[in-house]
Amino acid sequence: MNKVLILIAVLAVSSCSHKPIKFEQKPSVVVEPVKEPIENAKFKFLPSSLATIDDAITVTKIEEKVNEAVNGECFKNEMLKPGLKLNETKDSPQIVYSKIKSAQIEAVISYYSQRFTSAVAYAEKGIFYFNRRMIGGWSICDFASTALHESTHLSPLNYSHAFKNYKGREMTVPYYMNQIMEKCCK
Ligand SMILES: [Zn+2]
Image (tube, rainbow, N blue to C red; front, side, top):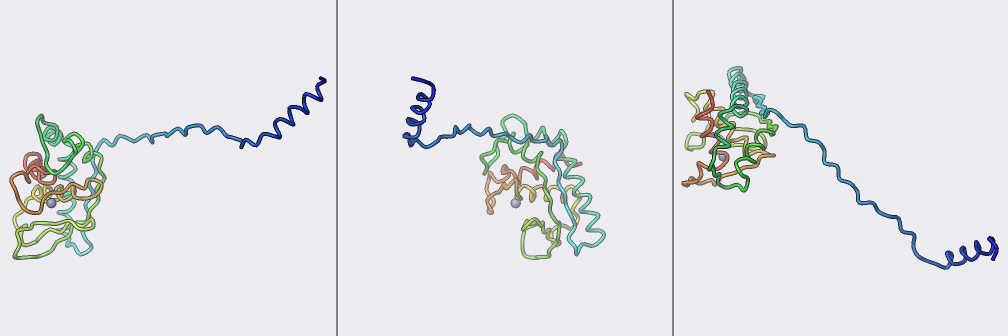
């Protein structure tokens, strides 16, 4: 058989085959974005547009105290101490710590006045409302403690606690923040 015939034969065979052409699909390589390690937690608190100058100054100090505490050794030691068990979360204390350390929280601090309640503050849509009737005589660390508690309710942290008080509530993430701040906010 000469070369021409071989070629015809090959073409004939291949033209009879109706096999769909398959393109080899290479498994796509998922490249994990390199996460920049965030050295320091960044909590940003802004005064509401209705704030007085004094309120605005307080907010700046609250921000300073929260960042100072969260990025300090005392906070680290309290979060990573052996045997620590936090309630109402599946996260280990190590995970909670790293989440807080890499959080970029921003919230507005505002006030409300309500007499017949024991509530000192609540968070709603990124705004922390402090009850003016409950905060008389508060130190900056008291504010910072509450601001950090409320911050842990916000995304991306999203930690919560039961509304009603019970024995283990002090060991939920938000309330543990209050305990930490009592020790670590100077
Ligand atoms: Zn809370």
